[in-house]
Length: 583
Picture (cartoon, rainbow, N blue to C red):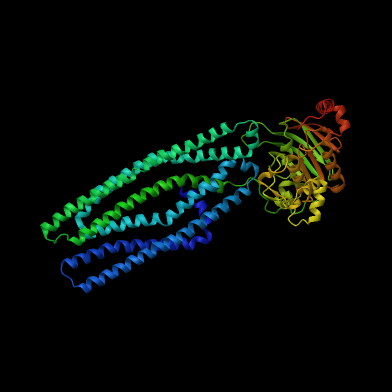
């Protein structure tokens, strides 16, 4: 845990000062609290011996001053500790989020989305609480325990040996309790991941759920996950709840022992060995010692819960992005030419099969390329290597005559616009979403891109036009409208390479044809790669690739493929004899 926690400590940054101040305030508070019983004992003994009222008042006022000072130190520690822990959590959340943003697809594949959400919410909340406890309670309780033990022996002498018996009993009991509770606490986090995954999946697929009338099933699945978490927490909390009766037992045993033996000593020795003041101080120190031990046990429980969170966050922070810019990157892409040279690719080094095998491909700048192939033929995998969303396993991919691994990542990706198969719009206005392509785009440029993508007409049909609010994920626009907005957004980048990964499947063939015609006139020098299921979407391309099982099995124009490619010919004939199938 310490090793993982060190990975998170850099996130403290500007909150080191309040963290250190918290520790200083806590030390002062503990010191004052331990001194107060000592002075109180002297005052009690002085009163018993007939001290004048003025001396008693003077000591009493000094005790009040110490109490107020202790309270002030505690309040100050609470303020600075809250500021430090909340700031640490804010920075940590920012750092983890930025770390995830730097991940490649390969890195993200190692974590589920639900798990990352849990880590940035629940886990960071637990770490924030642990950090607060470290700089406050984890400092206070051990200090109080040590100081109180020293003062108890100083005040009570042999009478303090009661702690030699009680402290081990309490320690053994607390360790047994926490060890029984820990497995349940650890299991909860894995179940939190599953709960968040169920929620995310249900919300994303709400239309499917309602379309199949599976609401009751989803409720049952969510209820089961929620009950499992509740069951584990209840079990753990029941065990941890035994802390209180164990603490009470030790506390009252200590009180009985000290009162019985102490009173007997006072009466028999007439205050020579121990006096009334020392007896009252012993009771106070005994309470402080046992309470410190109980707090330490709660710290142990919290740290054990947080240890799993710290480990999970440490995994994210120690995950090195598999794709980074080189030491001396190239910051200019010459043109949109693309070359695949003996490329093979698999998603992980441990994978047995290659997703792509022996790909040799040369695409001139400004060329329009269509890609056809059945499901699982690795069409999307092929184009994802161009903007370096993944790195090749063997061979190399070149853009503008240079290996993509030589480019600065931002430079490369700013020159390659990808409209993925799963189109996504963000919360905000249509105008906000379009400016993802170019933050400095003018209204005229946005409108031109939307006209090219056949989106301007339906945008203007909305009451607010380009200021129409888009809900999360674009749920308030149709699939075809979403696709056209995403195409317009990509066009605003003015890329040297434009990749459409089945991005017009939700629009009709007439609109599809208009979009492709616009490409020829609006971006003639841009290399255009169109992945499609419809032959009509690619038949006028300069080059058509037919893929099967991760290989390019045929390439050529429409007429050439009709002669030499059985797969292409069969697909064309099926779609034209029976009418184009619905996508």
